Length: 402
Image (cartoon, rainbow, N blue to C red; front, side, top):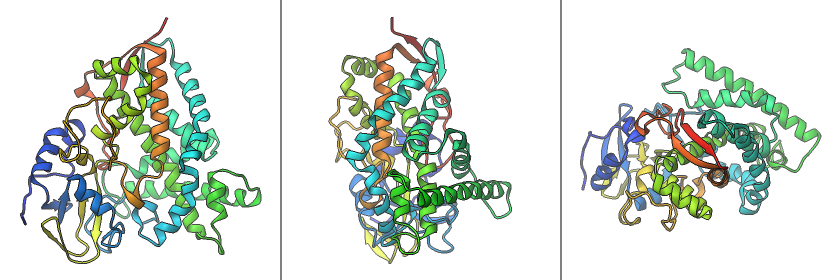
């Protein structure tokens, strides 16, 4: 049924602090049209609708049309795998796939375990820590920037600054302080990455960077600019995803004593726990596509190039797919989630984020006899980036075993 409703606000802060009433109404009333950033847009939140949109790149394009009214454009027009369609997307993805296959991620496990051990050992004996600053971000930084992409620790700030500029709230109108800062951060990161690329060409290695660079250059699968885009995407987006998932996992488990007790009783539930955290509190709240032609879809007539929003965070509460969806239970049998995307646009770094999160969660439960939020759950603030669910700070009270 075609309808025109305007109650929904894509930037409602409650989508981060208390999304469940909104998700419930979304699932009951979608699909519908509303206004987002001044443009008429369609909103979808049902699992199978979002799955279908993700799965049809020919009909639902990831590329922002010229002059589209859309303020959420984190990469400001720079090439990015998330906002490209085949055949460009296919070429970009092909260079990354080997590094994120199950066997490759499994080989990363010892390095992740060492990083977790070092970071948790540094805070042992302290009664209170700030999780994001002292565990989540340092761990994400070491795994993605250090272990996976071999960036020396003294150079990490180049990419941390760019990640902060990418996801900073507000627009980047030409000439604004935000735009100037973003361009400066991008330029520094691009210059650094070009040096990495040239060094890799001169002295090849066998890591992720090598795999990308070997397919670059005039005769390769990728152009030099595409190689650069791949590196910057991994160095910024990958770090943010890992840190966000870790922060949310500790926040959700530490605020639920019954679930923490279950995990203590069976540390093998760490894998399930990470899936349930991602289901309940998606790291990415929404995504968007643009129809390549006028089309009837799920009862709506979608215009060519109109914004189509997928509330992927809401899909995990679709009662047609998940039993008792609003109940948080780490014993739940995991099902395929859409919170990391789907099909050709499934987040390629999600396996590394899952590995890192379950490793640190399991080890923290093993080391600390008590792990509680040091402030009320409702006091937790989240970053202002519209699509990202990431706590600003998570104060934890800890008591070491023994």
